Structures are given as structure tokens and as C-alpha cells.
Image 1 (spheres, rainbow, N blue to C red):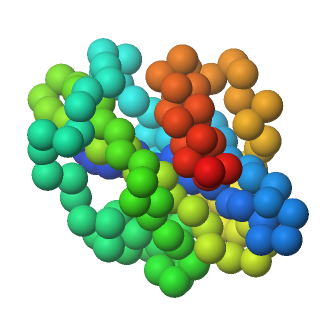
Image 2 (image 1 turned 30 degrees about the vertical axis):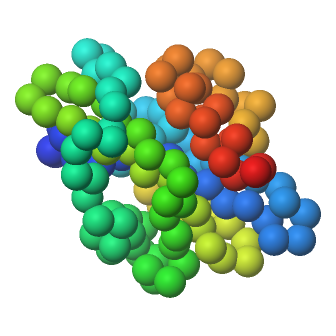
Image 3 (image 1 turned 180 degrees about the vertical axis):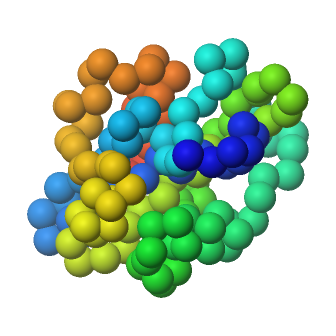
Length: 139
């Protein structure tokens, strides 16, 4: 887990190119990599603030997961943020742009790929993010 409580969080997914099967990564603590949201965090409007450059987020994610940056893509249509004690937390939608999901890399970090139907018991804030992300993913 990331020591910085205001570090960006990632909602990670893979969409199969041939079948459009979409799977999200579920971590031991929830749906957001690499740390859960603080309990006090509430949804906030991200448009009034500067969000970290996507390249910075991809570089950090690639390093933590042991993947090439070219294997990742930040979905630019998805913008989310949460207000937390001490500041704001940016949420990014990160797609694995590989032919198959990177199962080994995710499992090495304690995560697993799941269908959206397997997320029903997640934090309600995460469920709202999943709903928004899914709408963007399926178009």
C-alpha cells in the first residue's frame, strides 16, 4: 500500500479485444489500487483543480506492477476525485492495453481480475466509481 494518503488511486480494468469481456482488478482492500480510500473521503468535483498528468500516473503504475508503460492506458474520459482529510485524492481509470489480462503481475500484488457482477459487496463509493467507469468502457 502507498504511504501517502493523498496519492492517486487507480481503478484498473482489462477489456478483451475480441470478445469485449471486461474485468476489473480487485485488491485485498477493495477496488482501488494501491490503497483504499480513507473512511472520511467523500466525492468531490475534480474540474476545479489540476489533476496529475496521466503520464506520471502510468509511469508509477507500471513501476509498481512491473509492466511496460506501453501496456497501460489512462482513460481520459473518466475523471473523479475525493476530498479527504488533508487534501484531494485523484481517481484514474487505468486500462491494461494487452492482448490478455496481466494475471501474474496483478496476482503478485495480491489482486485478481473479477467481473463487475463480483463487486456487489464493495464499498458503496467504489461501486459508484465502477458504475461510471463501466458506462465509459461500454460506450
